[in-house]
Length: 448
Image 1: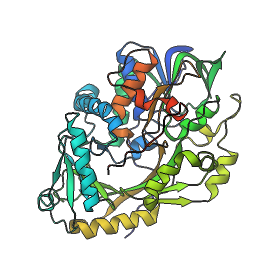
Image 2: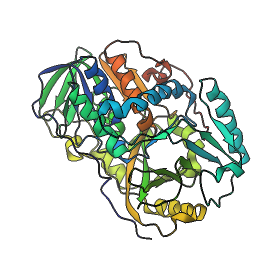
Image 3: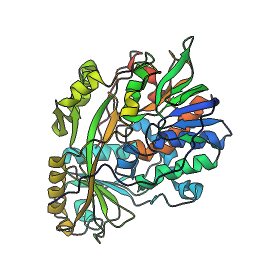
Image 4: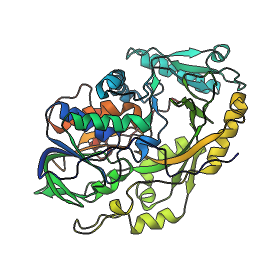
């Protein structure tokens, strides 16, 4: 089956600002859903805010993700924030004045084994403490959600209130709403480094000049580690390659987002489905892989069955090129405006085979496009949403481990609260930057 090679999915393009401000209250680095959500929140609160994106708004993972808006199976430490995200998604279409594709369609995770059923049952019990209605479906009930299913399962975790949205629309529309509310947004404007004076963040040095700011939010996704390294802040962060494809339109009769481990699907506004694997990904071995080996070892051991380690050109490339530079010289951020990795075709082929074996309705359906994205992750697979005590004025929002799209509006809101000294609606303590150094034992919650 031929797959269309792509330089990334098509997404809405924006007209943005050209003339840099001399000074703002808050400067944001990164034009993904986290950054633009923070910009929107700040603009709505009449804070003078500017966002800087080296490439295009939503050019990287924020247009390349699956488009799931889920509570199901999340780390319990993320649930309060995700509940707030559900509220914000429910208001989003009205807020941005357009259709982000958000629908409450429900999400199902198939329990492929009895052990998985037990984990899902325990998660549903824990989630009930947060007021989340999630339950276990018996195998006989699953066919109603997936007509023609041939796969044998032990059960399925069903969270009816979960939903989906269109990544290629949502992030640009949120950015447009931020501009309408008074935020300034700059594309093709790389931040070469964060400006620091007497140990405190004082603004940004971009390829087009300096911008002063009382606070700087770094929401740079896979680039955050490098940008922070440039000001002496060590963020333990690695990148994982995730490959995706989308089908041509099909009447499959499947409305919920569904995961069967070897494949996961999400219905799109165009009538096709976004398809990927819940269990397979690729990690390039880089100098940071060795540097953070001890911190990431528990995560690797937990995920090793589905993680392919690959040693190649990326090791030398990152050793030589992915380095902080003087602000008066062109940077790696200008050399790579959009991080656009090639999809792992062997993975996509395996996902496709698993899909058509389990759901024969997809047999013979054409593939419109395939792409890949780089997921930024931390040793405990939950994000950092936090100030950084060693650099007053610095706020970091990164490491969302592929879960950032759904939680993005609330994560951006929390970053905005922290940047202006306002108490967030949920407790940010579990997501603090200092957990990597304050002696707390990092731990993974593996529910799915």
